[in-house]
Image 1 (cartoon, one colour):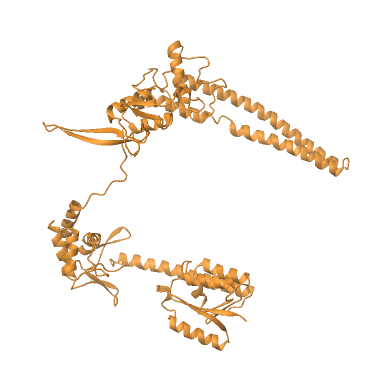
Image 2 (image 1 turned 60 degrees about the horizontal axis):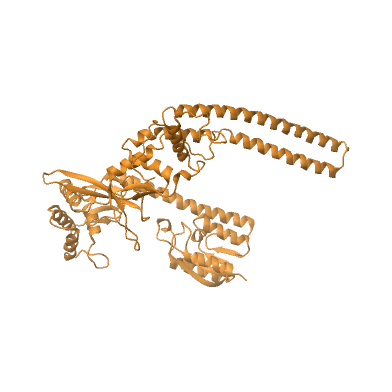
Length: 538
């Protein structure tokens, strides 16, 4: 015997306007259950839309069915159970698993067969289509109202929605209050809180009986609806409703609002250029601080100082702040140490082209050799197959030899793929590094602070410190492997050539013992051959 859960639902959405009320559904379904001698173990009433999944009571019904408390559902129509594909799919799945034995409807016939589930699925699909189509029609109707100049939402304070002709009309009792608060605020003698108190004294309160908050008052005073326009979906439209105030009075109020309201913080403002690049000697980060100096003669000077954030509760920092100008001078001098001297860029590019052509030729030779070997193995596989088909060898010998040849062929094909993918992959990153190194001179002597910061961060990471107002590094930076940081290889080569006087070494330290190809994808640049070192402690 099937045990039914009687489920009735009605939402407040437009789609349910023609659906029977909860009481009518209950009466009809209880009579249906009695006439058909159905055993109803529980009645569930839910007032929630079924357009989207997540109805708590419907979910509880499915859980009880899976737990075995019931095995059937009685409802008015399939659209009472599901108007979305997720809920409909859950019901079909429970029917497939035989945990849900039956569904009974007052206005829809269903039998738990393949054809019945097919028709039920169609009914669920029709319900979803109806909702989706209704939503589109509603949106289209709202857009048409906007085009006619009718505000498609709840009337603001001072107006009311006339349900008879579906228009917005002036509330004759509240309209004078609206005009009063606009005139009060336009005098620039009242705050939002004062306006809220005034409305409260006139009997205008929130639903909880409290005074309007300042943001509520501001929303009223900045609403263009009161002079004849309205905002819908972020766009302003001309309305057909009766305005309560003039545009001039509205503009006067907006000037006072802009004057009295706090200026909102600009979260898009960039921080001082070198913030996030340097640390203090106490290991705290360096921040920037703006200072203004006003002289007696009326001159005003603006300065930026970089100082320790002093956020540590255990360490007392004694480092002094440093002005942005000397700090920029030090960092520019530090950056110039890594500039590519004149002539080096052209020489390196020639070496890159030469090495690239040589590598390409070697790769082509190697690929041709591997292709010949693969073709030879393919021929051996074909001859092996012919021998097996001619019964010259047994199956076991054939399979063993075939596996050996296939394995060798696969290894050769992978080698070919690796060579093809790896051809000249180092050329592009090295060329980019060379271009960047060539631009260091102009960047170091320009006022593009953020470009300097980017380059210094790439070269030093977070290993720059402020000590006694000087930029310094920790550890012996010259010991960093050029394979990890080619910038230090460039600086070491510049120092070496400066002492030896030989600018173009036949095989420079930049090239390394294994050739010009770098081991990491980071090479860029060129600059003057001036070896300028800033006032830094390296």
